[in-house]
Amino acid sequence: MRLDILDHGYRRRTKLLFALIRRFSGHPVPDAARLVFYRPGFYGARAKEFTHEAMRGPSDWSVGDRELMAAYVSKVNETAFCIRAHTATASQAYQDGPRVAAVLADLESAPVEEPLRATLRMLGKLTREGKVGAEDMREVLAAGVSPQQVKDALAVCAAFNVTDRLADAFGFEVLSPEGFEAGAKYLLKRGYR
Image 1 (tube, helix red, strand yellow):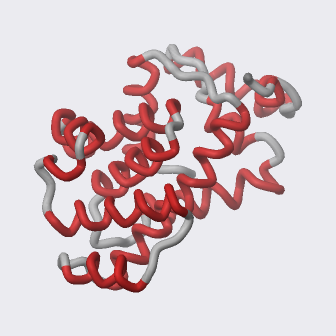
Image 2 (cartoon, helix red, strand yellow; image 1 turned 90 degrees about the vertical axis):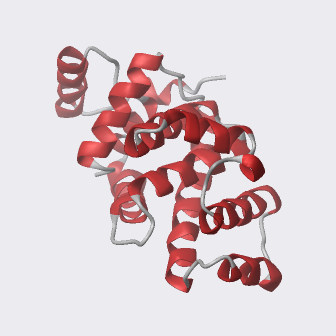
């Protein structure tokens, strides 16, 4: 059930911005964007900054890797909007949609490097169970992931566990394939700010 709060309560300036985005992009403003514009001082500004840093800040993980992490966490959470949004973005970042689809279909047989596979496995466990242990971290480090890469991956996981829950709570509308492709282009060009 969709909470209609995302359709109301914006300032005139924000409504004008939404109208301009729709006119020039040909697509409605995604609910994820609407959410960060709703009460920006309470949630939106902080969420945008944290997510942008996790997804586009300095990291040894590529943008494609982090977008794939977001899609994978969202798949574990079964959050349709975020799965499709970050699958589209990872596919464009890698220029390899089949690789992204393979990871989301079966991580263990997907054509990815072992450090990324081990990291995704750990993020999946953390998302499903709400915790990981020392042995889980040892496995990721043994796969060749640096401690900083672990921290960076955990930041992506935190951002998307929050976003997924909000997407489900608010009932984010799933866009058309063209809408998700347009959103992916925007995210790759501008990031999360």
